[in-house]
Image 1: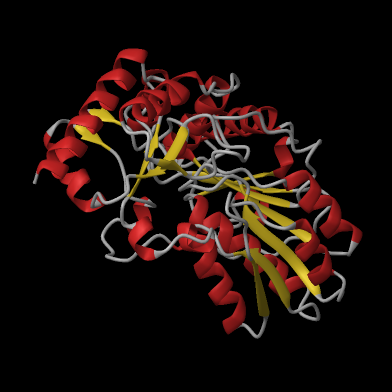
Image 2: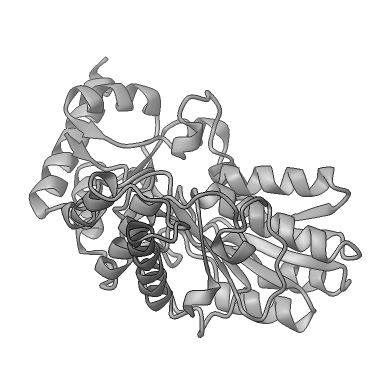
Length: 372
């Protein structure tokens, strides 16, 4: 199987598995225990915290380990809504991940208001619209995807952060798709909160992190035993956290767009009618989302699966739902266009041979559907 669905999940790096194994086998101790095995587990967690902080150009004390990005996103929203109840407005965008959309709904249920920014045909927000909404000085939080999970389009997070801070608002970045693909420097882009997920960067599922700037007050979502410095209670997932620390070390080298560009070029030569979404905007180097006019994406997925190629028709979180991509609709495309669109996303273990083989099979499947 050639897995071209890395934005949904990535394979576990063998080096990551290796550091996990001692905490899955020999050392099962609770890291809060005072005896030697517990102290070793605690030390491993703090080493992982330091590695993640170095990866993000942050401080170890700013890293909170969680079960994944969804928990991190909801925790960020909960904290801001709790600590700034007088500021009712949340600014987000119309192209958010399902977790961000659900967090915005929860914000409204707690008495807040939400303004979802539109995007242009390339999938980028309008900074002037953001500035105009911020001008009311009612905004508590600006929260949005740094890089879109469906199209790979990157939002201008540095400019977003500057504008928000000038108007007294905090910033949360959903940085899940950025990690391991492009450099992240949280000193240069001083967001207040940022969420990450391990399984999008060659660590296992079920572990993630929330960056909480030392400048920001914080209210935990989960309380109990006071783990993570009182910011996220619950016994720590030691194997997962150790794995995430190792994955962060290995992700220090950014990906390049060479293989994605080869893939798109092969397809464009054979299928010049395809429309590449966000092509003229800054994009993740691993992501290609395109429309095959007149071709049913659901049928393509079946044929590609039979030919050992895995990809997506949109977000993996919506793979079982029969509805068009809200991201493409927000970019101005209609439902029929979205229903003919595929997302291909690469990880760092892919080779040129993988890409060329996948492109040939995609072309073959298009020709098969057209012949029918």
